[in-house]
Length: 222
Image 1 (spheres, rainbow, N blue to C red):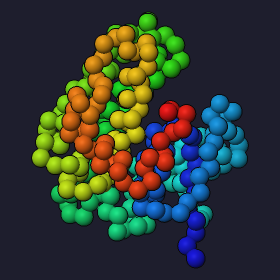
Image 2 (image 1 turned 180 degrees about the vertical axis):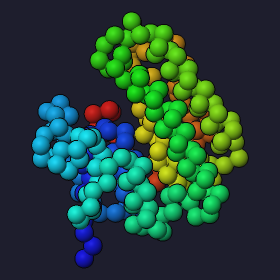
Image 3 (image 1 turned 60 degrees about the vertical axis):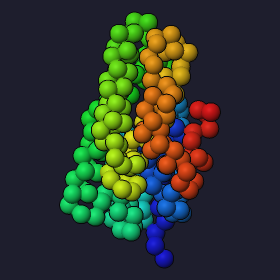
Image 4 (image 1 turned 30 degrees about the vertical axis):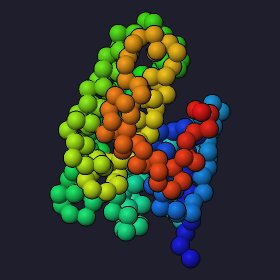
């Protein structure tokens, strides 16, 4: 019998969401351990023994542990080679990794800078910075919509890949951030994504039609 897969996560974690997507879409049986960040369960000794950085996600497979969402996807892709999340040919691998890296280098930093002022106060004092980060996101979304997805339905080529998994939770979080009442007063003009960026909207729809995706949407976001 193969060892079971266990995932340590926070409810609503963007990075853990990526791993949930890969596992759920491929109908892999696994166990989720939801830690409570407000109780600092990720900083308790029993968890730090598993992940010294005290972060999520963390994947446990038998006696083996993997941290960082993209590294976990690489591990799972090797574990289930039929997935081919990171491509088959040299060119496919390069294109997919290129897109994954750009998500991490461009989209993710903007989101992380937006979280504190929008959810924890200080938006008025950081209004200029908030607008700038949304403008950076809009510029990237335009590139993805008008260029990367101009002649295809998936970021990595002609089928679902790690590139789509990497960015999907980020899109959903942008929607949540931009829907904030105070942000709405800034005239960000990024929503609805599917109308402003129709090719991106098509990508989101393609992902959301895949098995089990809707069940992963954080309940407290609805």
